Image (cartoon, rainbow, N blue to C red; front, top):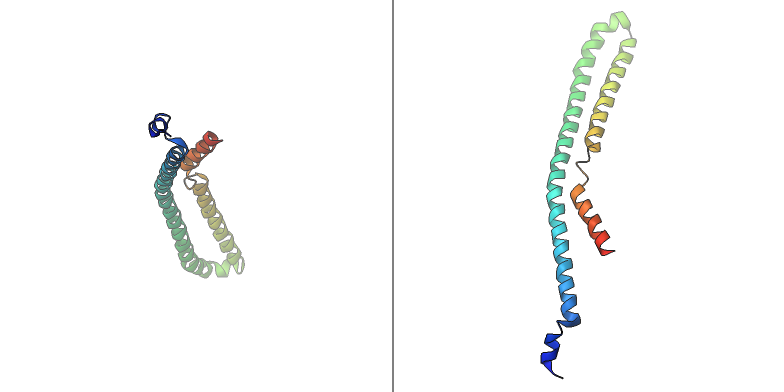
Length: 128
């Protein structure tokens, strides 16, 4: 068998598989790099969301501790037990508003890896 004819006809099966493996590995590395970049952006959004949540909890604690004591003390003679119901409703409304704010932050889609998911979808369509 002449070795010069084998090199003229191309790299063969092993060369093709090696090239395919290199391309798949390169594609995988590119997607991991994109995911890492988006993860850093998502991390910043998660930190912002946690900061808002922590501040909301702290504000709620201070509001409950000081506000309730003061208002109940001032209104007890005029309203009696009803002032406690009013305070309860006020704090429930504040909790609902803060929950809606957190939900709106989550719905903005900043925690969803949009570019990575788009590229993975394109890769899947190309391969199929």
